[in-house]
Length: 488
Image (cartoon, rainbow, N blue to C red; front, side, top):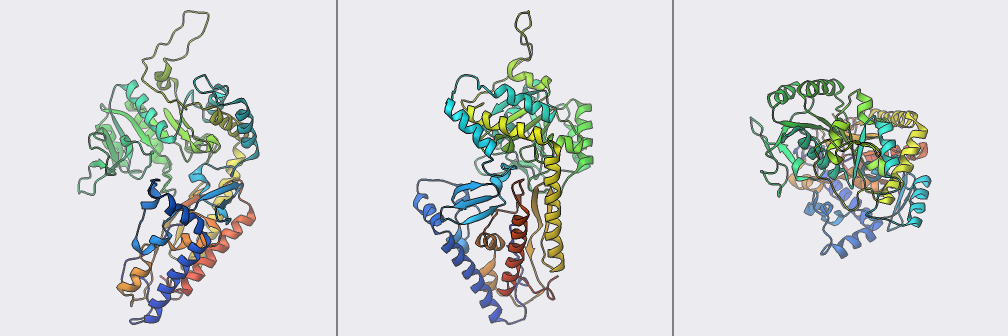
């Protein structure tokens, strides 16, 4: 539950000249950081020891001199169920859950057994993986798709899906929506400029403007975007959409998606659903089944790999035939008929990944949609309890969820106190205070959201709620949050 402190000069202090308030704030931040460093010193030592040779974007993300001493990732050592242990021996209730991988918790026994059995047989690379066909059939059964291709990651899956769409349509431009994340492929690292007439621009340094010149970025859940799609009808090879954006789970635009499906069908433009997060999470059939929208191509990963790297491109045969020419049989004169594009990857259909995926998919098939329905309901109740607490205590935070994915909607700490100074503001500005409070209380979370899994127990949920309440109380004692009578 990522939080930043407002930069407003009215954000923190309670009276026009309160040095005591400022000192409490500085002391609170100092104590919080000291406690965190003491608990996680092995993680910090490893970060320093390997910084010269190991590059990791997490070291640079959100870097500030103020929080420099706590700017390092927790180093995990082992995990099981809903728990993770770090190299200092600290136990955490994990809400990161592998950024959405571990729907079934860490290291499920049936996945572990499948991987161990395959490991005994070896890792045959170059020949077809024994379980690849069975895994493809299970994916088709659960998602309703017709054919499946495997790769190594979600980024590769999106890249392959777009290439297939371009090959089949003979067009080059793709449309995507602001706020979506489709991996770290240059071809989707595009954004809208802040101009009066927004233009598509590279999202990060190093992404060439030439690479994204065939990308049209539109506003999500905006009917005006439908008109823009229609205007580019003759150019578009595909519309790529993250049906519920992982960074905005409160935005669940069923009507817009259904309109988008109707429009792309009418115009003959392939619709690609990026279901890295929603796939197998919200429903066995993913967001397509949930919203009643059938895409032409869908990409999957995360959950289906059981913790091992995997990417999946699934779709209608009319598109997926571009991988291998289409279906044919032995013993007759049938042959591949479709024009093909290029797909490859040494580790695609890795035997260990296929064994893990088969175990996960068989379990999901056995449990049926009730598994997701139960978890969705538990998460909704969990988020409702936290939101009720925030409202009752006048804490300016609100959470939203889509199934077992949840995220902060509002997160700025503000109050009507007016005597904050630049020094007091600097003491807390930009510090992810709640995150460090949670870590110090044994709750592992990063950024503005997280996931519940089927492994999280009622006891875990009560512990998380306690950590939230205790953290808020500590922040009020430290004059970071206003008391209820002063809060907006």
